[in-house]
Figure 1: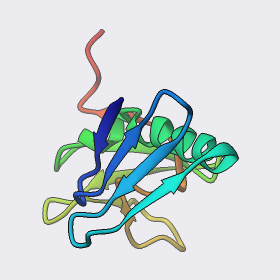
Figure 2: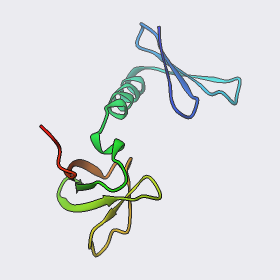
Figure 3: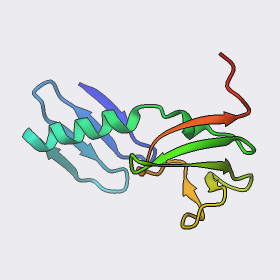
Length: 114
């Protein structure tokens, strides 16, 4: 059995038989998830646990974000919060660093040393 604890305190136990048990810290109830639902949840957790370089962006840096897989535009990292602030974009005001709409990003300032 392996256990994963999410940042919100919910624990997911993975049992060798392919089933998952979800435990909430605020209740006495557990939820058994099995079959296709368990596989979908497993894929979700694997995807969410992948580190994305832009999650660690620091205030003052400039990144080029790819949003929804197609639109690219430069953004600065907000000094007052965990958001990107687009530079001269007609629609976006801010974009959260953890947004699922960011499909890729690259830092352009300060330049990445190789």
